[in-house]
Length: 437
Image (cartoon, rainbow, N blue to C red; front, side):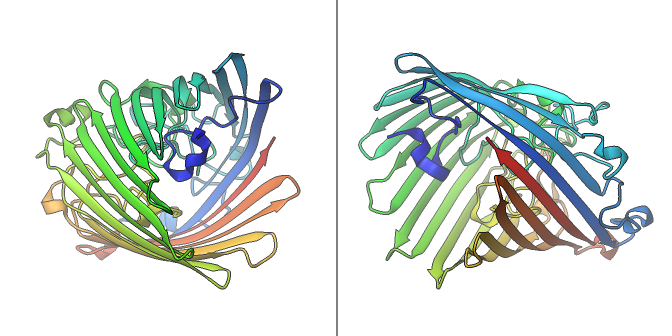
């Protein structure tokens, strides 16, 4: 069984086939990413200068960036392949004419703002060697990862990647996985200041993952018909031990059901990452989902509840997205909110391909974030006041010739219970054009 067949439960994605017929295979992507927002709300949340900004203004409420990635794979000897990808990003001068900010690679790896973020940037995104047979494979080097708590995100103009070693053994209907992660170029959750929502550090800089790397092990089983069972364990020294259990099944060929349960057990040394010293409390999360196909429309609903604690369940590499059912496919209602400690969230949505050549989807998500027993976490991610969030997301995706186009409109509301002047509404439009070759 090849790793690519694991879909959303794959441990990593290396892109091109390791055994291309012609031995060498080259691919790439050109992407243009644009977003603009308008704000309204309370005086402390929306200063007059921000309230005056309109859609498509060339201030920091609008951002854009272009990317070019070129990569490939080649067989070196039998069962051993090399995979590489180089990525470059540029504003193309758009900051002088169309926008006032960029969406990625604008923070240093410690979360501070990069002084030269508008300069052209480039880095080696992927560079690894893989040994693979039908029963076993192992890869080492720079690569994308896809695990529930540590993964590469592809929503932004560029993806974050890792310097890691990953091994799999294929035993009947079970896949056993083990991984060590030494460095990564993400920025966000494990930094003491800012950086969330920008995916990759300035210059694609690779830096230590946490304090001294991380370890993971997993078992993924498909013995039960139409069902995938997952069990993951993570150890991030001086930060936390974590586990993730998940079961997804399809009933009667049309109803999808899923349940997730995970725990985060923090280490007392977590304050070395900065922020206020606080109690080091464990946290847990439970999430469920249900989906059904009716007359060409997929309808779904999901619910999640995160306990109080020091850390939530966002992607530990960025602090941004999450694998929780309630956080999938939203611009703002993602790991920063639905996966934060002391949070209850529910989500409903629908998608269809009934319009020829177009995929349409919409979702509504609401979350109640508590005060986390009045204490913030040792790193970013925990709320200290009661706040309600809600958002509508509407997405249209199509293809114009060889170019994939995605347009997203969302309205995001923040309601701080203790202070109306902190309430805020954000309307956002995002457009992504991608040409893969």
